[in-house]
Image (tube, rainbow, N blue to C red; front, side, top):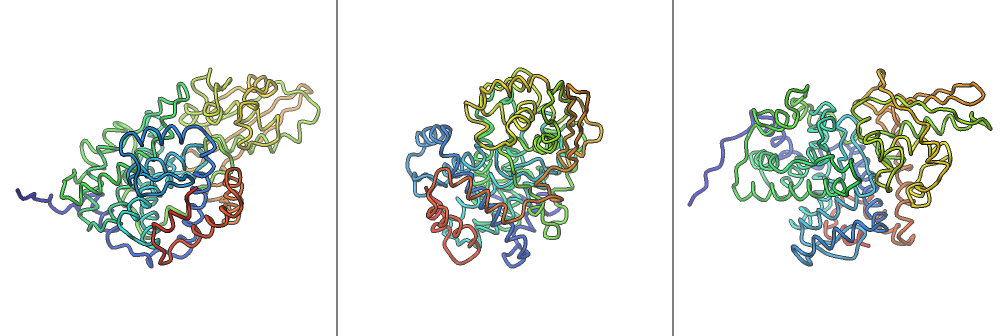
Length: 464
């Protein structure tokens, strides 16, 4: 039986992306974009190592091993090997598991956590080198970011995690590029993965672990879709803009920007707009942590009567609801998505690090009592989704009122972390679980991405 491929899809957004990705070459990417990409990968790999200190990777490994058993692909920061798609899932879990990984701000999407695992698994399977790997990763980030931008900040408001949704499309393009698909094949891969792109925010109700799985599942979906497209499977051409395409189903009746998916490809590099997190908490709260730390020295010996925080209502639903989980976090996952806890911790302890998510910190009575004094209101002046604004007002017992607004969160493209700051973060995160010699080996491998080294050798250097 002969399969007849679908007609060319160049008139659609998926077709535009397919044409761009198919013709893109390593040398087409500006040097500064490639250098920033290496540092984003460094941040992601360091976080994958750091995640191994927590229980969730072992649970994920047990679940995945029950399906496919051992495989040939290395896992970041771990000794185990898994089949390609399972390795991609676990790598996504490791990178995103602590919610300390990068975020493309306008897309409200963790872009590296799906793009890197998909590109790495595809490159190892294809026997490709790290030039191909790095290019595929860049393309995956570019597409994921644009798909997220197309949602105009609305995915969270209707209960979808854009990292899972947008990440699947980026992963499909990354995997399709590595596997040698032509423009039409990469377009079809996007059409196929559209039926796999989902990720619910219901974990916010009880702190379930599902969010940790989202980018890994997106990476696996991208690999699967690219494989089906390579075999000749068809997918709907108008997967983004069609009557039952992504935006008309996931964001029905809302303002969206589907045209963003195919906009300025190869001209504007969304990767350079990706923010690296300075705090291990939901990106929506970073501005509040900085505002609280700015005001802390002014409090002196006075008691705090009330703390008033203003936030845009869309991110507010994520970090302030349900109230019982935000004003008294039940575990570290609740805590990192809790505006009251983060503000109270920053004011009490003068910092917010991974230590502030440990059990003793979560039980700190001074922090929990202060969190009860936090009141939240809508912020009419928020820059969301272009930036994650935060305004804090502290009323003191001596009558003074202290105010500070962070209109643009640190890490944003207007206030980016420098590459040397990313290296410092990497050394800190990996340093908790690996010896300096291992950190040196990983850092050299990541910052050397783009040479003729086989992707498989790169992955070996990044094993635990």
